[in-house]
Image (cartoon, rainbow, N blue to C red; front, top):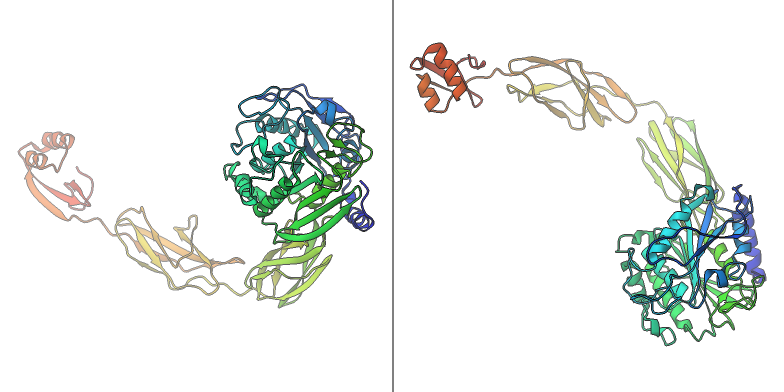
Length: 567
């Protein structure tokens, strides 16, 4: 692709600063199209071809390959219209190390396929479990599972022409968790009927947005926040009217909340791309119209000429859309950031950081977060390639992070600061006024006053393992009656643990009876105070008509006035 001078210079600078610097050695492929031998379920694809670049050091992102699914239009097949420079993927794939997969539509017609040789893009009845998305997703799964290809699941894209463009849009909306970038070319507006493509769109942008969310079951819409969209069409297209592409563009502006104009870019070959960003400043949509082009895939110079529904005389769209996806992918962290902290005196710390943004962006701001006695949440700490900022802090031990945000709103990974101490730590004392209250035969409740700067307390019984509580009280349960227990309490905060408090002794109460009844053994059994086994044992020992006094202790009857077990 040849760009107009201003855009060409800009992109060259961006690539020089970012993508090219990430060249990464990968196991080279054959650099040829290889036919897949597996099948991928019903409806079964006729065939699929795979292109793995032979370039051992391409301009990949994050050391892994991208994957492009390329879908042909009606009346085409992968072997006659896409591979072998027909769609012109090869040169771009080699440059970026991108694997390209070109399947052929399943054979025949069906209840959802209007014509043989056409993807079943039309209508609104789409989901993640039926129609042509099923084998296509299985194909993607099979390719990305091949470990020798090093496919990055965050760099999977889909593109297509005409019916393939309609299917591209369906895939992007039903599987936004799969596709980081979606590129329909000469596409019917999403949800259109098969016969509506050559008349003004019957779908509205809002309907496109609503359908895009609905066909993934409204379960994966969070992934739309990191998906990008690129559409292209000819201004002379008589088969799928240009307005259909505009409706799709405006619908995705709603779905992405990307209504802010980011200007236009001119592309050699007659292309004019309108760009849109979201409220966070991230570039989300490219909508390109190609002057003089009718209904065709814009393969550009270098492509095989004279292919039906392919235009090799204008824009090289494979080069443009791949560059657009690589520069604006929102799922690949393309940052480099380092950070450190210095404590120059007893009351402050200086946080330093250095960051390199991804291609096409600059460091817009740094965010510093410190946790300790003084909390810092500085979302505008600085900008540019480096940061050096001091903070006044109270005495204590601190931890924190530094995050960079680029001019497109993409955040770096958080850089972890080593923990550091400012000044002398405030002393931490144990509680000194512990009291044992609320004593029962099976529990002891402890109370104490709060200790300054303590955030929690460790309670130990008889020197055992600590129980941590955040309140200034603790009830120890499950204790034996009439038994003494010793307790200590330790104060705790984020920086230290105090010594142990003085020991306090608590003694559980003995169990006492609440009721006593004198009757014969038989009388006690008849009244339900003893069970049949107890009746037989007591009768054998004392005689069934012998008089016996029983005591009720915590709901249980015994013949022990000290509430011991039944003898």
